[in-house]
Length: 455
Image (cartoon, rainbow, N blue to C red; front, side, top):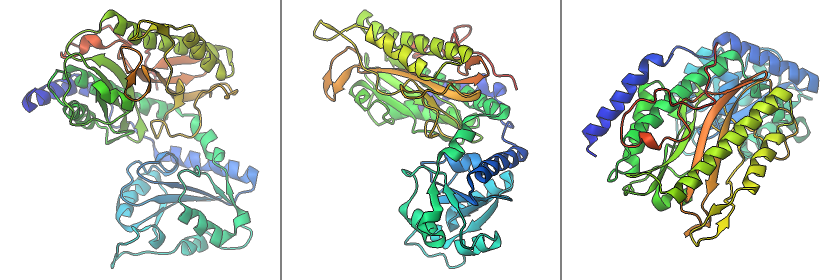
């Protein structure tokens, strides 16, 4: 497919969706102030004087939620929140210019620290100060200060942990990730509304990608259409690299697009996660290029769609009855235990799921650190939350050794819950094969669980 045709299709989809996107919907400064007070109240209960969170371009969620840092660049960074007053964003010199913009919007303070610069660079004119200077201004450079490190240890650089311990002492630096995660798990109305816009963008991007799946195009060309649509509709970055995997590349499960040319008859898995004003949407589907799936392939894809329905019905029941969230996991696994699909050697077997069915979503696509539904999660779902239903089946157990006629199939959407009400943000139907290679509008063929969140 020629580049001009790809651009034409992308622009057609943008025009279809653009008037429905509210680009001005964002988190106001007043909400950040409310968040700080909620965290500070929790700190007071536990006897903490200071909260510390860190981030990078990979792990953005904690700092994004706390201080509106949605677009970090270059260096790692952090935020400290004293028991009283505004937080301070700690940044290096280069990325600090970007983070200054975030500080202006959220109302946080900011300091450029030499400790956060790129290690082998030299910045002659940077106005660096030290962390101890920042702490002195906050009256926290004293003995006995208790520090709660709220970022997960897998994200916390050793250098930052050692820095805190050298200033406050090892016994006074405590790891407490749940003090932040439990609070940011519950979403405000404005957060749920922003995520609704993100998922409108996700649907538009997927629609454009489906329309351009024609044998002979590359995976990256399809991804380019999705990325173009997302940015055109107001999504500045993505929660993961846009996923387009075809043929044997479905062994990667969540692989990014490559220069591989898509062949007729190959299955193509697609996924996008636009970041809209700091919050994420998501949608993923699997289709066949150039022709419809045959009956056995369709049975595999239908099993994923049926699993989706089982899980969403369990979510609705758990929300209605305030059941332990592990009930959702059990219902999905019970369905799989009774599922037998035809294998390539003519037998019947149960395909395996690659991951849990429900995960949290917010200022990241899946790295919120709390809220995934597993066999061990006994708490009910939160009162007001945003989550992702992410169901998939593997057609293999070892790379290069297919068992089923489809290597990997997925249906992923985002949904919102408010009290007992549950609804999917995305309008895309579960089976999107009919939209491959054309720009027909979705029309009334929408997700059966879709409902608009009203702010």
